[in-house]
Image 1 (tube, helix red, strand yellow):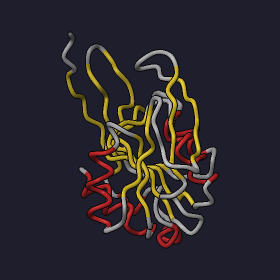
Image 2 (cartoon, rainbow, N blue to C red; image 1 turned 45 degrees about the vertical axis):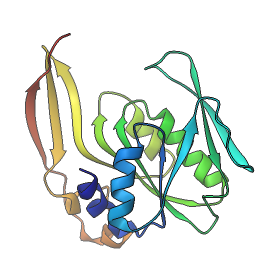
Image 3 (spheres, rainbow, N blue to C red; image 1 turned 180 degrees about the vertical axis):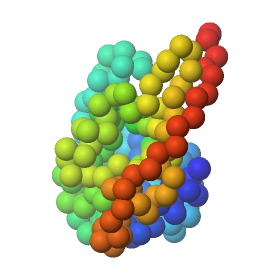
Length: 185
């Protein structure tokens, strides 16, 4: 999955992959290795981070309460071209915080990418409102009667979420829909 995200992000020519610990590190590392660029991750909770540091406090619906996200400016430079990589996109709060922190460090944020996107949440719109395109491998459109309704672009080069160098190709988005059963616990 990380290799596939890397293929989709290569055209942006990033210099850094940025993610948040802990669940973003695995896909971020594979993408960074495939693109031959460094992986930088923002630490969560009450971390000790090298100064100067940029921080955001974000609500955590998964854990309840709030989470502190901290990024050392030693690892994201004003000359960096950043892609965000994470496992899931739901409400987009973590990704928005990462975008804001990278921009505060002076870096250019090129794209935010995710393995799975919950399309019935507002994360996608929150990120695109910041002028950052969103790239996902699979999208959960809805949960219906114990099933996840999934869609995914059939041809990445024909979606609206592509590197600037491919922007002139045009084309329309074609989606393939699949139903997958969800085990109830």
